[in-house]
Image (cartoon, rainbow, N blue to C red; front, side):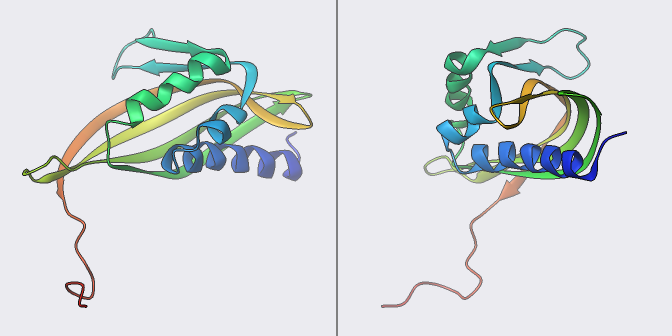
Length: 155
């Protein structure tokens, strides 16, 4: 049985991953993985990953993908986990918003519906991602804008 402490720590870990991406904090992002951790990106419907990043060195290059967006916003939903000693498995649902603001063109929100399939390991005094499979379910494209709530800026 998974203890409440482990369940809460694993939930905090998946939230830390999302916050690190959205804050563009590379060191924080790589720290959620084990030293030899993996991030596998799957295209919708594919049984095999299109790309796998292995180890913290390769994981640092994940931010090259994120850099193409003005901002991201990962909303983490359902999270399940099962522990077995210092190992665990889990699944997390996520709606990941990706804002693009081209010069002279309309802004767009690319929303990815994602299921993360996770393997965790206890390392360095806490839980880390040993492997995260990013299973994109589908993508939506929506118009977006950074509208001010209180009108234009005044001097």
